[in-house]
Image (cartoon, rainbow, N blue to C red; front, side, top):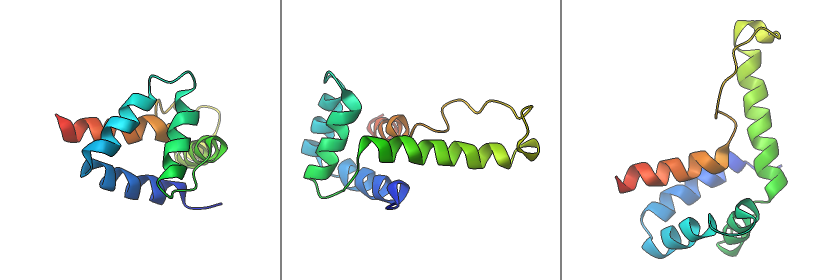
Length: 98
């Protein structure tokens, strides 16, 4: 599997400097299936990112975080939002715009 986190980071950096890309990505949030539209845009820009890649990357990251917290047992605290790279991508863009 490709380094989704690295690709998203690179794409986010480039999008911050490109108003047309920003507009396209923010408009994608209004699509019937926002994640699919987001990934379609990514692929159109040369980043081979698919929905399952995003989901798996988030789940892998979250599982890794849980294992490192309290020994990773069932009593580990819930880490809200730490597994959603889609939302983190937009949060980074919005932070730059504010």
